[in-house]
Image 1 (cartoon, rainbow, N blue to C red):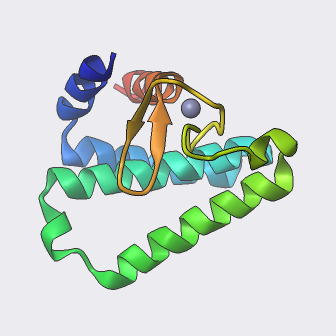
Image 2: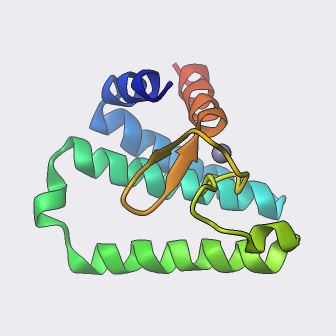
Image 3: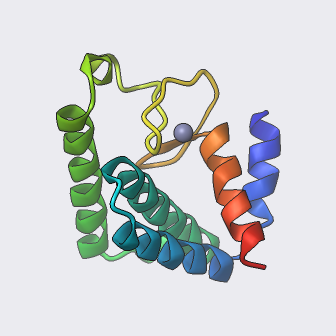
Length: 130
Ligand SMILES: [Zn+2]
């Protein structure tokens, strides 16, 4: 349910999200599987953005940061096109930005969408670090 996801996200603090973002980047650096690296990087970008949103930084967001986010998302999209089968060329609208699977239920953010499975995965990672 979208409602459940929203509750879940709202219960996270900006600090927890920033920590999660850093952990995801570290995970990406230490993982040799390209697909998982992309997943971790996507999660890092998304959680960083969510952290900034929590802290209300979107009103005064640095344009350079927006540029970096766009560049990252472009790289992710290119990786998707280069690295995956022809199914990746179908309409990207309803795809999860992190696992690239087509999903009917997605939480949509300004730069990315995330499916229930990926949200659950994120929650498990956070829980495992408590
Ligand atoms: Zn997903």
